[in-house]
Length: 257
Image (cartoon, rainbow, N blue to C red; front, side):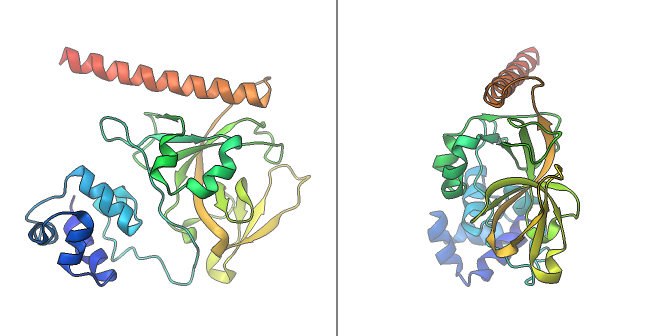
């Protein structure tokens, strides 16, 4: 928590709040806010989650980055907001799964913790520490990735962090949830060019200010030679079994120690 005290002071002042006003929002004493900002005390996990939600920053960045130095450039404007998350019993972030049938609901509930609690969740122990979400992909626009596959994406903090030619899941106002390869730099004209790997589909553009969330694809999960609906259900079951097995192994290790 090297940067937490400086970040709290920076974020509070960015809202032009007094320590008393900030303390009221956190439902703690003003003196405790002062102690946090001066580095004399450290917020517990519940307080950190609340702070991240209030200022719409990820928990990881709140703790590990100097947010004043990592301010997003003003030129790349968008409607992106840092997402809500769910955690397991040990405080580790889950990977929530968004099936095609829940896509419409996700556009309204992506920032709602209660909505996220209703989604199925799993974990992949080989991924680096970050924030991830999984989306079911429908259609043949990204062949050879088959319809019904699940794309696990890593959360992209700011639209200017997109790299040309890489694949992303975009959540936007008008296009909903799409999985595409992205080209064109936002800094130049605030427009993204989305291309399909299936060349039968024409590329199209989307304005940066329409984008709500961006997830960089890191893992593809799919079953060969099965229908998309069957594929999705099997993949979900496999991931849930994996999560239960991991939790069981952790308990066994704890018992042995």
